[in-house]
Image 1: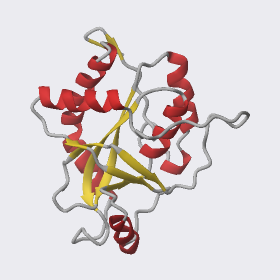
Image 2 (image 1 turned 135 degrees about the horizontal axis):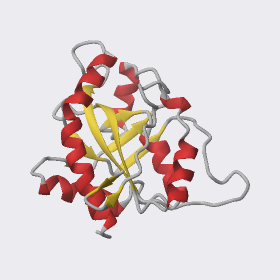
Image 3 (image 1 turned 90 degrees about the vertical axis):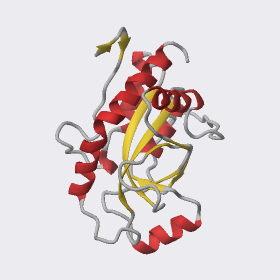
Length: 207
């Protein structure tokens, strides 16, 4: 699609109707596809549970680091040996584009946060969350670290705009319910789209 002269390639990682669970997403196809299309950058959204009480539902975060606890043996380099640097796990320029875009539309995005990626599709246990907090984790999800790894291998600058949909298990006063995740993503969707479009424009312009 094209918006204000900027061509955007849109991918629904879970497919239309949210039918594909996180451990079955074809992450390699997304990375190869972006590379083949000549994408200048990749921006994603991700529903996350928050380990910080002050980051309640509706908080937006431009993730800055991740821990990969998925166990997914995914790489674009099965036939050769290539080692990519992950000193900056999320793209510097794409993260900057998200933050600048949020500022321009007068929205608030947290500058940095550690994302722990689990395999899913289950949610975490309270004891797992307790361990993750001791490791400096801010939010938990099931997709963004895998995408960040493969996009880096494809040499595509990738950033994730995480959307807090709930407090994590053991922190939330109630059991986790997937419907609350869906509802919060719908509530925050318009804000996220405004930020993403502005960020995409900056990336297209080389900002």
